[in-house]
Image (cartoon, rainbow, N blue to C red):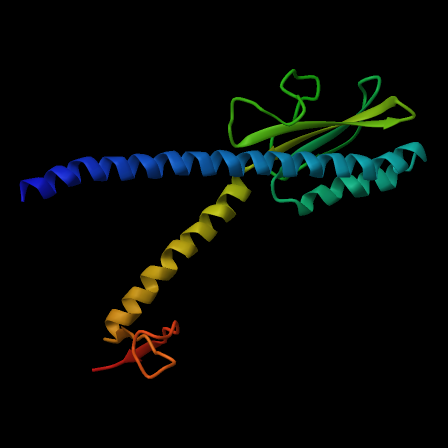
Length: 195
């Protein structure tokens, strides 16, 4: 009995530690992927703004900025011309305004808040910067979707287990052979039966 307790004292902390390390690595990988996806989003929005800016179509610029509302993580955006004047801005209802002159705007950088990133995308034409698009993105909606899906994935085995126990189903695996013997085949059918 003491050997089992000693094994548990060693194995349980090792398993918990491995799970914590794996969780941190997975979280950091997901966070990096989310930051890259948002950076790509901001650059694609900047590229869609470029033709409207070149044609001085303010209605199209406003429409593209308003379209940022369809992305749940985008909290605010500001389009600044090369001289530093604001051309257009977008702010999700209930969010604070971003400061484009702040030094926290770096390309896909994370500031003090690990759930929010600030991305700057330059709009260039003929190697000249016409404007800069500054976007503040909150990563929490994406984290919430990931947590919900992981929760559902973890709940499915529990629900199946409870259903099997509640219905008093017995699972029986049998190896069916091809040559009349029990050990000849590789087919393993699952049989459910109720007592």
